[in-house]
Image 1 (cartoon, one colour):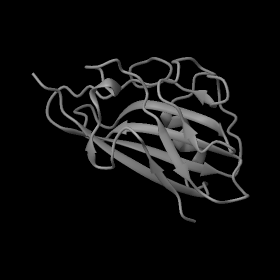
Image 2 (cartoon, rainbow, N blue to C red):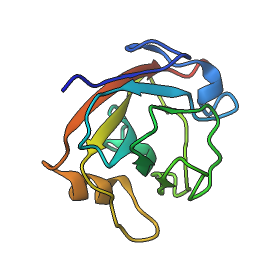
Image 3 (cartoon, rainbow, N blue to C red):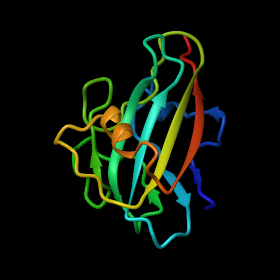
Image 4 (tube, helix red, strand yellow):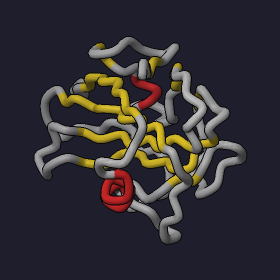
Amino acid sequence: MDFQLTSAAFVDRQRIPIQYTCDGTNISPPLDWQIISNRILSFALILEDVDSIKGTWGHWVIINIPESRRSLPENIPNEKNPEGMGIQGINDYGAIGYGGPCPQKGEHRYIFNLFALDRILYLKESITRYEVRNAIEGNFLASCQLTVLYERRS
């Protein structure tokens, strides 16, 4: 199954624009994807910093993105149920919604992981990326990634 994640704001393996980071306005970026399947019931998205000194750090989690969606707009409100977008969970900052790149030192890789699911996820109120990963482990139709880089300027 061909599955691709892109953004109008940046290119895979390039620097993420500052407005999507803690040094800017810290808003979520626009994302687009393409997939053809009549078995998809929802999508799940997880954004992680794989170079954090604390281990992999979760910046964003959304589940139950409707199967009819093929994009997420820029600047999704940091609320649990943004209209028509799914359910946002708790990031590793302890907040609901998007928390942009904010590395302490050096250049970090941030990976947007998008999963096509053949079900709706029924998880507790305050979901985390760990719970989502456990719920979908080995049980998704397809996945794709988009990687961005960021290093804070002094």
